[in-house]
Every structure is written in structure tokens, then in C-alpha cells.
Image (cartoon, rainbow, N blue to C red; front, side, top):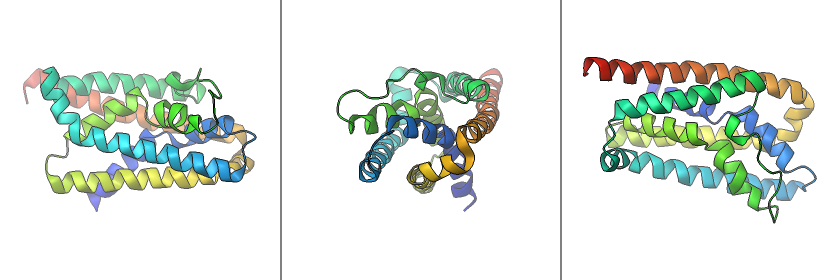
Length: 204
């Protein structure tokens, strides 16, 4: 239970849920309720598939590229920190600020840009690879995946309630919550970088 809860919290903040809600509201403005639900299902489903692939092929990717886990920790931590700084300063993720509001059919926004890179961005990918590599046994990996699906489920609920959340909190409230999320991500990024640098320096 401890592993599940810890991993769930990590991924809930990694997905920057309140920023995702803000982007979803902007991308689906004027869409019907049924259309919004279809977009949510596709976006969450796409994100889940990407996470599963990263969970099971992250270690093989490190071996293929000749990159140590600790070196990747440092790089991924720095990238996550930059994403966190963007959230704290503006309430937005830097890699998703200039995305078009639409590109072709409305369903297209479910995968790009909502699933990628709004939910699963470069910094999130790096963090997922690091976290999954820290789950060496099949049981831990299974619990970790359950926690990720739980975090995606919570995000799905927030997206389904996005209009109500906006009415209650307003754009300013969502922006403030995004900035708080950025602070948590900055702390997570610092820990990832510190662990990687320490292990590289002392050869742990």
C-alpha cells in the first residue's frame, strides 16, 4: 500500500492535472458534452498506452543507448525542474504553451496535443523512465502500474468535472493550483537530480 500511495502521488503531480484541465477547457471550447467525453476517453487511453510502453521498455532503452540510470536521473531531473519552473512562473508547461487550439477534426486534439505533450510531455517521459527503473521486481512494477492507472483515473475525473471546476475556482484558481503543482514537481526534480549525482559521484 505504501508503494501504491507514493507512486500514485508522484504521478498525479507529474501529470500536472490542473494545467491539463485548463488546456482541456481551451481545446474543447464550444464542443458538446458527448464530444468532450469522447476526447477525454481517447486522451486518457492514449496516455495509458504510452505509460505502459515506457514502464516495460525503459530499462532496455538505457541498455541499448549505453546510458546509466543515474546519468539519466540527472538529465530527466533537470528537464522536470525546467517544466516545474514554467508551471510556477506562469502556471503553464513550457512545451505546451504554444500549441494550436485545433488541427483538423476535433477528435485530433485528444491525442495531440492533449495526451501528448500536455499530459505526457518530455519531462514526464523522463520521470516515468526513472520511476519505473526503480521498481526492479515484477510485483513492484505491477503495483506501480496500478498506481499510474489510479492517477490517470483521478485525472479523468477532474477532466469530466472540468466545467464545474472552472466555475468554482475560475481561471485564477486553476492557475494558482498549477503553480502549487510546479512547486511539488520542483522538489521531486531536485530529489531525482540529487540521487543521480550522488550515485555517480560516489559510485553507489
